[in-house]
Structures are given as structure tokens and as C-alpha cells.
Image 1 (cartoon, rainbow, N blue to C red):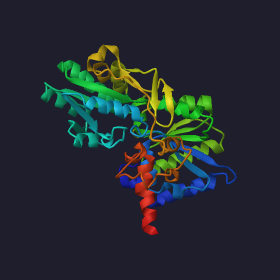
Image 2: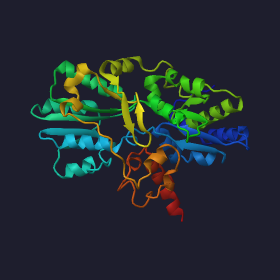
Image 3: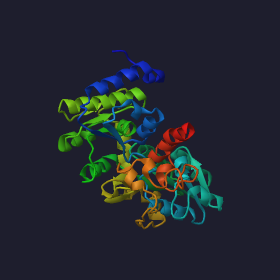
Image 4: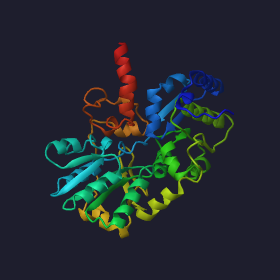
Length: 373
């Protein structure tokens, strides 16, 4: 088998159409297939490359809760902004968080009103700001799945080693496996197989997904992000279903080791512990589904320092983010989509991040259709 080395090779039109034809040949025309891509990066690629158009009509791709910005409930954003308004606080966040709406507006809107809110590219940027401003309290709004949790953990360990006492982390790190289990346990969901998340799996490996195949009888294929990656993963899912198998297979073997990233997992486990409960947008409260700082790191915990209450707050009723996240609605079926809710003026979080289903659909399908009309 030829080994691919360059991105263009994973976008080869001839190979793409060859795999598409094989999928068409293997599917049962009398059956329907619902595959959920859990990762927001996969959702973005599917819309960007128009992959749904290459699949048989009876294969439906369901966009899952794999975008950490999208699953962040309004209450957590509001609590973060409350911290940002405290005297002497410098509030730091990644770019895709800056436009996430809470009931008090977005971080960018609060910044325009005088709050010291700064965009960063790495947790270490926030730590440097704390070192450079010893008379200020610097808060990192940490967010992400297991993909980004190790970098937050290593930054906290660095703060401990340097004895930086004005640096605090507001942890919104969530875990992918409990979310998938919640989806599988939901009576309103029918998912026949999963396109497993590539980025998360580089950290946690492939073994944590085995319960999906063993206990729920659903195949899982860990996938890369290029067109050939995703189409090959869908082909593997179809083959498993055709053969009556439910296994975890790793299409993204060039990046994802079965055991995961051991040093990254070690850093996470040293700094974080699992929260008993955490609220997810669209999925509600899921037990054991998020990370908080261990008690021995309370000195750097923003929830301890600023006495965050952890209140649950509902999202705007008009925005149907929850239904889209669970696959009950397609993005364009939300009554606000493309009208009151656009990437320029988002009402719901799914329209903020480029990996959100609504933003991806808007940029790569909605605008294209509008230009064709």
C-alpha cells in the first residue's frame, strides 16, 4: 500500500470518487444509516468539502457535540464574565471564546466597555501576562476537550514551579466519553455508528471507545480530517454494518496511537480531577463529564479564588442549539438560522466557532446556495 505524505494526496479527486463509488456499491438501498461525527473539526471538513453530496441519500451524517465552545452553557460564560469585571482582573481567553454570547453579552462587548479582556493563543500566554503584571489577577478561561486540557495542566504546573501567585484558571474542560454515553442513552437518538474524534484521540487513544462497540453494539472509526480520511472512515463503518460487526477501528493510525499520549494523560491526571456533574448545552447535566483542579492546586483555581457559585442558566429560548447538537435538527432548520443568528451577530454558540455546525453550514452551504439563487 502506498504511504501518503502530503495533504494534496488526501484530496485526490480520483481516489475520492473511487471510495464514494465503493460506498454506493456497499450500502443497502433498503436501509438507512445515521453516522455521528463527534468532532467539530470533522463537521467543518464535511461542509467545507461537500462530502454529504458524495454519499448515498440513505446515509445521514449527524453533527455531534464535539465543539467545546458550542457545548459551553450560558451560565459558565456569564460566570466567567462576572470574574472579568472584578477589580484588578485581567481576563484571558482564546479567540473563539471572545464572541460567545452570555446573558451579559460577549467578552468582546465587555472589553469595549472597559474590562481588561485579552485574546491569547496559548495558556502560557496568560501565564506570561501574570508574570509581567504581578499587581493584577490574571484569569485564564480554559476550555476544550482532552485535546487542550494537557496544555492547561502543564501551564498550571509551570505556575507552581515558578511560584506565580496571581495566575488563576477557570476550568471548562470537558470529557468526550461521557457525552457519547449520554447520546447513546438518550431515547430520542438513533445513531448507527460513530466517526470518532481525531484530535481527542491523539491524547486518549482508541481504548476508551471500546464500550461503544461492546456494550451498545455500535461501530466506531477514529478518523482524520481530510476528505479521503472521512470517506474511508464512512466506508469502514458501512463495511462493519454489512458484515454485522461492531468494533473500534483506527483510520487515523498515522497520528493516533492506541495507548494515547502518555505524558499528556499524566499531566492531566496530576492537575485535574473529574467533576461530579457538569452542564452541557443541549445535553443537560452529565455526571463525571468535566474536569476541575484538584484541591492541592486550589491556589490557582479561579472558582475557589472568586467563589464561583456554578449556577445553571438556560440558553435563549429562540435559539435551538440543543436540538442541533443532538442531531434532532439540521442547522438550517433552526428558525433563527441566517436571519437573527449569523456569524456576524450570533445568538447561539454554534454560530460562533468555525467548528460549530451552524457556522460551518452557513459558510459552506448557505452562502453558496444564496449565490446560486
